[in-house]
Length: 170
Length: 163
Image (tube, rainbow over all chains, first blue to last red):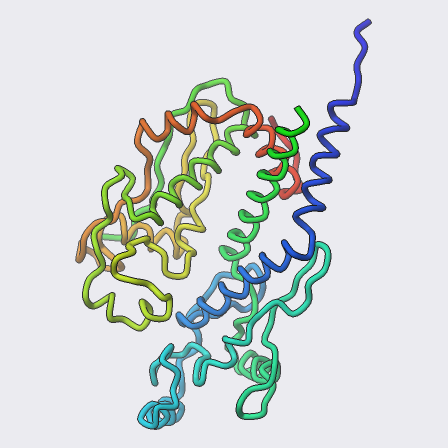
């Protein structure tokens, strides 16, 4: 009778485990969180929000006429961010809210991102984020495509680590 | 003319298992993304430059783009959404989910329509791969690449390895 061993399978499992542990280290989670932060900042500045994680992105609600007029006044005074225009709905006035989006909690295998810090007007970015979300302009979530992009980056890193492990243990 | 579903089919050697074909597709998609972001069409020709209007737009400024860097990347979602659509023995289909916003963007770039019914600008056809480039990928695709890719897919999908 042929002798069957599971040593190969055990080694493969150990490679997967080692790769997962390495990828889940805080320094890697920070990298993915920073990717996610940049996605949220850029996508929102371009004018789209996301209601919940995994949803499609959608154009942010248009601004009220009164808000547009106020933003025109701000622009005339040089107080409107260069990353917006009076009519553009992109959660950008001074730019502080989106500039503050960053990794907020990092640990083994986990990361959170969100607005942080106190603004020049004395408000916290967290409170401003909560306010705009309550007004129907949710943005601090990742769309289905954004989640796919992060997932693909994680997968690539795991693959590269496993390749290195397989190559060095041959 | 309505938005067209954008995808392309690749012939690959028969007899490769499904899980390994999935890894191969990932390599091809990564290659297409990198090539496009280096400014080349699927035929490895320089992508046409951006229009004056687009280069002066607020979107262009927000995304930190430069006229000399034609890379079909604004938010990054279009290239990020490219995916394996069909996985069969001897054939892969790569492209965009039909009806998605990213498919519409890809269609606009590929046909030069950019959201209109007819072409209004140059075509930036990035979706495809030359036989030479495909051969290079296949020749350099080792058993270790296949195994590492399959293990990574398994670790991140939570599903079965059907290879």
